[in-house]
Image 1 (cartoon, helix red, strand yellow):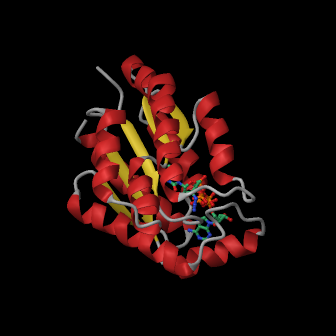
Image 2: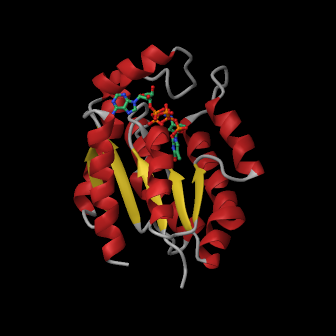
Length: 207
Ligand code: Z5A
C-alpha cells in the first residue's frame, strides 16, 4: 500500500517549521515511516531554484516566479515525493500547491485557471491526502517575523499581500473541508499542537 502525502500550509511566521517535526513525531509514534521535506526545495535542483526565488536582491517577475515554483515542484515530485510514496513512506511537506494558489494566485494576483492548468500538467492526479492549514491574522505573524530580523523576497511583502494570501488559503479550506483542516495558529504553541494532534488522529483513523 502506498504512503500518504501530508502538507503544512499558512502565511509566513505562522509556525509551520516549528510544527513540522511535531507532525513527523506523531506519525512516527503511530508506526508510520516518515519523510520530511519542503517546497520550494527537496531535491538539489529544487533547492537551487529556492535560493533564486528567495534571494532578497533578485528581481523575479510574478510569471517567472509561478513557473519556477512548478519547475521546482516537478523535480521534487519525480525525485523525492513519488518514490517515497511508492515505497510506502508518509511524506510530510512544508508547503505545496496550495501555497501557489495563495501566494502567486492571491498575493501576486495571477490567474487561478493558469495555476490549475500547471497543477494538472506537473502533478497529474497527485494531491495532498491531508493539509494542515495553520491560520492566523498576518498582523500577529508579521510581528513574529519582525522579531526575527532578516527578510527574504517574500518576507518583505506588506500586510495587504499577506491578507490576500490568507484569504485564498481560507477559501481553499472552505472548498475542500475534508482535505484541509484549519488550525488556529494564533493560540499558544501547546494549544496549536493539540489542534494538530486531534486533526492527525482523525485522519489516521480513516486510513
Ligand atoms: N512560496 C510561494 O510563493 N509559492 C509556493 O508555491 C511555495 C512557496 C511552495 C518560502 O517558504 C517562501 O516560498 C514563502 C512562500 C513562498 N515565503 N513566505 N512568506 P517557507 O515556508 O520556507 O518560508 P516561510 O513561510 O517564511 O517560513 P517561516 O518564516 O519559517 O515561517 P513558519 O515556518 O510558518 O514559522 P516558524 O519559523 O515555525 O515560526 C515563526 C516564529 O514564531 C518562530 O520564532 C517561532 O518560535 C514562533 N512561533 C511559532 N508558533 C508560535 C505560537 N503558537 N505562538 C507564538 N510564537 C510561535
